[in-house]
Image (tube, rainbow, N blue to C red; front, side, top):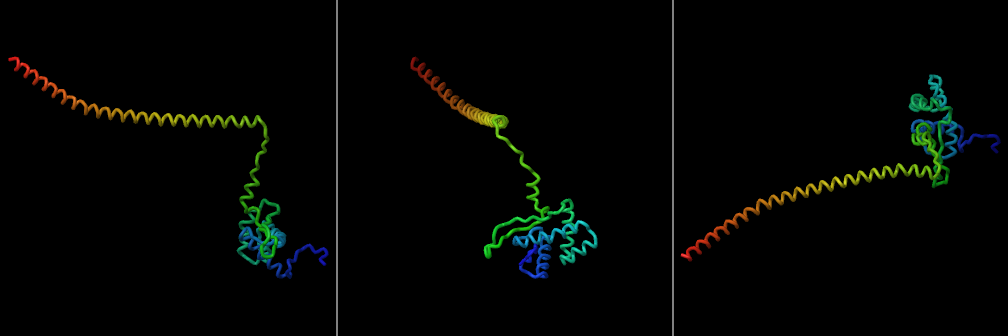
Length: 215
């Protein structure tokens, strides 16, 4: 029986369990988020958060203590140079566990554990709060008035644009009509002049013949 034994051994001996948690802590520090089972994530949270708190004091002693746990110099450098500055103002609670469902093979509860300060989407949602709105007729009418004003302005601008386009089309049509009239006017007088000349010649010939007959 497990009387007063609060630690979850995860079905492993002490050496195996410590090595596994050390590797998971290194992966979390390097990648900022890892996917695992819920019991492992809960044990990892208890294992890694004291290490992050230790990294806030950047000294040779604290670096040696953290390196003795992680056994990875790249993770120690990442922790003391970047993560410690990111979480400097946070008094604990550096990680977040979010459950993602159950694994298909053995139906184990799955989740991902991440560093809180590196999830920009969650930080943005928490910072911006929605304003509370209350339904009432006055607010509805007040909100409708600016909308109608903007709609009327938009309609006026559309009407003005349409009128300007119509005027441009009319001006183009009048120019085309003037051009056609000028062309017709330049062509018609020539034919009329020819016809009038022919008519005058015919009239003169007829008058000459009439005089000859009289004689």
